[in-house]
Length: 162
Image (cartoon, rainbow, N blue to C red; front, side):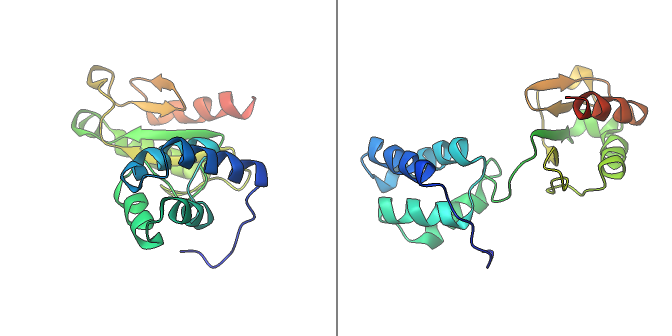
């Protein structure tokens, strides 16, 4: 875990403790509590994991193990506009890797990173179930189909203007 401590807002910690209480501080509800915590904070830094560990009376190592095992959970903050490139078979075969490379080049970040301004983060996912539209890119809840490397600049510009 990172050695840099972040300061959690008391109001957010109170919300997190309410979430734990709403699940009766039951260690068996760890995954549900983590989902709610990620909704509150946007990610699960070690400080959040420590609060959950304390409230549910489970070792921090167990909380960390669950967070790192499931790909849904993240320990790094996502950008305001999280970009996910589908790398499932259909998307991959139709050029998802070239689209991903173009996003990396334009944003100057790697998969798993967030731009310095906090606007964009980049990730890959396995399949979004829109194989007929391959290659597919998701930005937040919006899905882009049949994306070509040449489309990337324009897609990014749309969000930069927001």
